[in-house]
Length: 215
Image 1 (tube, one colour):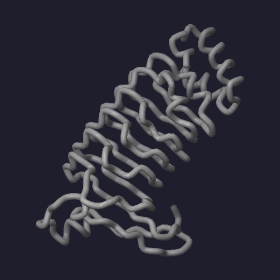
Image 2 (cartoon, helix red, strand yellow):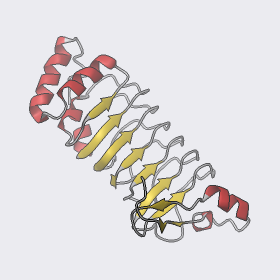
Image 3 (cartoon, rainbow, N blue to C red):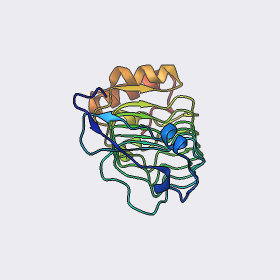
Image 4 (tube, helix red, strand yellow):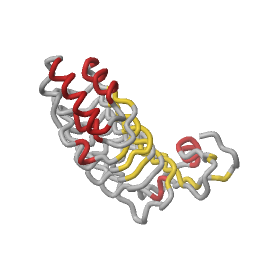
């Protein structure tokens, strides 16, 4: 985001997350860089590569969060983390479920984890949802989990069925999947609501992709 006015973002140190009195000033300078954004009173949490196994902390998370970055840790769950952020990225952990994660974000990246289901996904994703490199085999019921998102990427998974729910999600403009034929059919009919879903279903069936042509 290009700042039009400079207001310092409060950055929370690792001492607020872990009881670690031995962290050095050099570590703080290197890992907790002060950012500038146009918004006011936003807090950014930069906690990548800290070997974190839990998001539990002593106090409450800030109510206005710009970036929540816990990339490259050892998390198995998003429990105890914040639920509303601008950008939430938990790439390259060992997370198996989207339960207890954010409910509303602008950008959500949970790629390179062990997620097998979209149950618990954010209800609202104003921009992009990236769940590449996980263990998804189906998108069954995705429209019951997500109300709104702009772009969805689930490449490098094992999805073999039930993709039509994508057609019923408000705001969706682009889908990226490993199966290029399925991807092309869905993108061709996005933005047409239930009519588009029925058209995509017909095209999938005609292409011999019946398993994909389900909600």
